Amino acid sequence: MGLLADRLDNMHVTADAPGGAISGELRGRDRVRVTFAAGRYQWLDERYVEQQLAGLGRLLWAGRMKAYWSAVSEALGTPVSGEDPPVGPRDVDYQAARGGIVAEGRSDDGSVQIEVRGMREWTVRIVPGSLRRFREDEFSVRVQQAATALIRDQFAQVRSLKDTIYGTAG
Image (cartoon, rainbow, N blue to C red):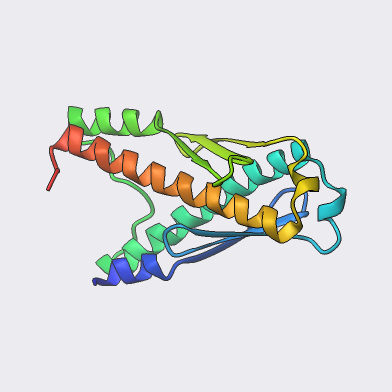
C-alpha cells in the first residue's frame, strides 16, 4: 500500500454537532461513530437529532476533506489544498455530475436514513419513536450503519461516474 492509501486508512476526524449534544468521529475511509453528551440522549426528540446529525455530517465531511488534502500533500511532497480547475469538457461534466450525486444510507432496520446531495445538502430522517425504542448505544449503532452505507454509496457512485466519463473501468 502506498503512502496516500496508508494515510487515508488511518485518517481520524472528530466534530461536535452545533448544539453540543452529539459528537462524531470518522476513522479511516468509512468508519463512523456517534456519541451523545452525558445524560442528554433521554431528553432529545427525533427532529432535533435529525438536525444535529445533519450538521455533524457536514462538519465531519469538511474535516475529512481537510485531512484528505493534507494526506495528498504529504504523499506528493507539495502543498495541495483542493482540486485542480477543470481542464476540458469531460472534467467540467464530471464535476457537475459529481455535484449532483445523491448518496443514501440506511440503518439495517430502516430506522435511520441519511441522504446527501453533492456532499453539501444533508438530510437525516429518523423513524418516529426510535429514540424511545432504542437505548443510546443501540441507536448509535443504527446511525453508524446508515453513515457507513452513505459513504460507501457516495464512493461507488463517484467510481461509476469516473468510469462513465473517463472510461477508467478496469
